[in-house]
Length: 369
Image: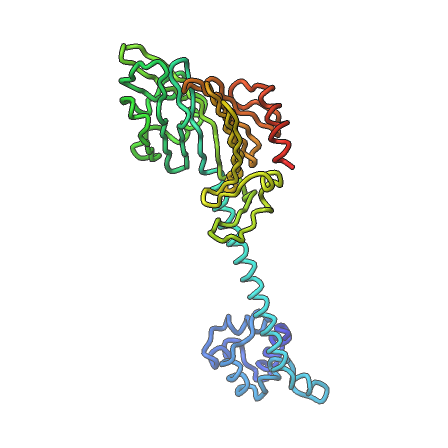
């Protein structure tokens, strides 16, 4: 429909009656500005007004909506006005639905974007470990989110038999010490929960200082104080948009197929233990025993080499290509390092190239095929 044409037709009908806009407005019980808007083609009168106009001007509603009186030339077009109205209505409905769909999609996208940026890299898990000549810690953990942090230093291993009577965990910020906790030996095995902005032990911004400088001061029974410079290494962060390895939940079904995710070498040479989510392989002779495991639910390959007087351990994460090595003698960690195979860089400790080459040639070359 042509709104401008309809407006001009209303003007024509009004002037035939010699009415002003105010006259027509009074007869229709509307404001004069409303009549002005019809005649300028800004609006089309609603159904009730069209019925009144039909009576006042002795024309049909179809003629008003067509913008002309009926004649032999426009007779069929005027009769088709209801069909045109329906089509016009459908077009408007489609336009409204399309606009609504676009707005909905934009709102969903905005929400997902907000959620993503609010939660991306918002949870980090760190390993805490360290040693000196007499003490060592290797099972500490820290979990940090934007709302809370959790710290557990873990058990202190004593190598000289001198009992610990006091411990103090602290970090350094701008050359100043800030205590996280003080207590006895057993306090290192307690879980410390820190709620940011409420009775906090440290702030969220202090996480970076804890990572770069965390220390455990130990007071021994004889009064001597020893210091452990603890290493804080990030082990996990929720900074992946997609999970690299998606494994179906382990079930009791004997038909479960893991071939797609398990290296061919492990499938052929290892035994599957679904109960513990692992493949394992064991060999040994005289004074030596070797156990190899592949934990398929976390994509971790492990080797334990046990000799009479020492033990050697390897842990290789097939997700981030990090190789962790431990050498233990007399219940003491003699050597420990973490090496990134993909980047060929030493991340923690002093990496032995001979040990790395041995692992790559004898194990990595097989499980990476």
